[in-house]
Length: 363
Length: 238
Image 1 (cartoon, rainbow over the protein chains, first blue to last red):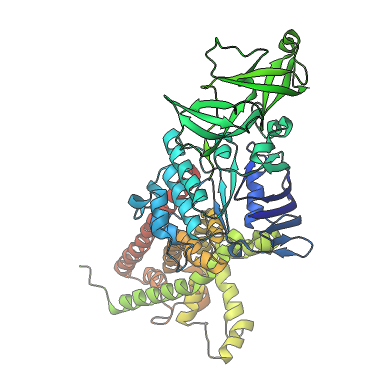
Image 2: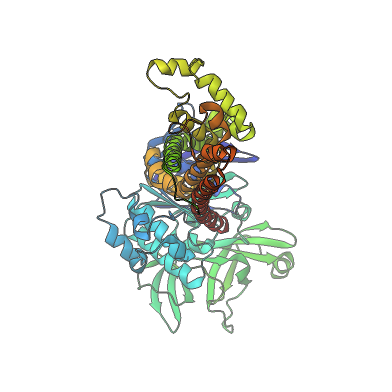
């Protein structure tokens, strides 16, 4: 998908000002509620007409204020899965599913199986749980064969098991070459698992659009979009599985020596697979030597890149290893006591059981 | 002691049913269109136009029925500007059952519009947006989403209108008088019976008949609108 957007829309007292130029199978809009994510998605789907600017999807102009062009929603082939599902209450689940499919029902069985809807087909939407309704709404949108599927916080309000199940479904859609996806979320775990590109949004404005590995490198935008603390996104290759753990190879192999190994709680991925995870800056400790008498399994030899002030009495230290960068928060007192400075070689310690994000299996 | 229903009374009942059915059937699409314009038209018709339509629609409800009948007589009578024009193409309202239907339809109109408008307003516009995002053109959205979801309101409006048309008296009697077999509906027949010495028994029978039909229509309307309220509550809770 290529998406090229530059629009302004005045919505009552709220101003949407969005600039996006992105390519990727899954682009995520990340921001707090009220940041304008849904408004932007509605504009892309044609449900909201901006005052100025343009929207282009895969090179086709869907909206251009100067040319007075506004392709109506029913001609855009953009499936929209709303937060509140919006199933048609007077139709059965099956009738809902086939509403936008026209005469082409070739994908019906596959979609029903993918989303696990077999037992729901004859039921009325009234009796469905939140998770079931979401799954039907996703199936309905998929069957309308959209060029772009907009998922507006599809996992919000779902509990643990249901959430994971739906996340699996979405990943399956991505892996099996489904439509391109615009994914709206304020949940980092979902982003890590699904997104290729991320647009950060705050206060009706888009802040930046970058590949997910880079978008949080400068923490200001991430924090403005609702991140609780600075994070580092790391990718690694599955090395092997241990007792309840999985070992990954991080970054690239140094000229002399071994590639950094990172231990995660066990994940379901075969050796050789690429996975992605995140580490919060406050979960990383810095030591001047590499202590061996510690329960912390992840000790990475890194070099201090930059030290920046971050809030009252804390500093954000960027550490680089071979082919990866991580960020750690330290107090100014710790900085003085350890004598941390740019270029210094230190050990970054990350508990294997510390908060690491969900694990994405890249193809 | 009470004799069975006389042919005259049966004729009044038959005429009333005919007048009410015709009035309701013709008023329904007009009322539905007006209700749709009032419920949805604010953006493309503008506030003033919808306010004007709103005022006109409710006029028969506010005016004394005698005044409505008098206005009809003035406009649709043989000498009236509309009546004389229509008479040339063979359509006559004055002192004909068609006039009774016109009066009944006009009086029922505001009630029908109100009930149907509530039905349209109860529909979540988000459902129509969802249909559009699935590729459905506006006409298909209207036929497959809007109309079925507005059905309870349409049913309630129809039955309410029918009950009102059955009971209409003031405007009808002013416009088309009370000619036996022509324009003497149940209500006019009751009035006539009361005015006639010894007509009490007849008035009583007709009154019971009239009340029975109207109450039946109201019960059906109530059942339909209850379904509507339930759906609204469900939509509100979601």
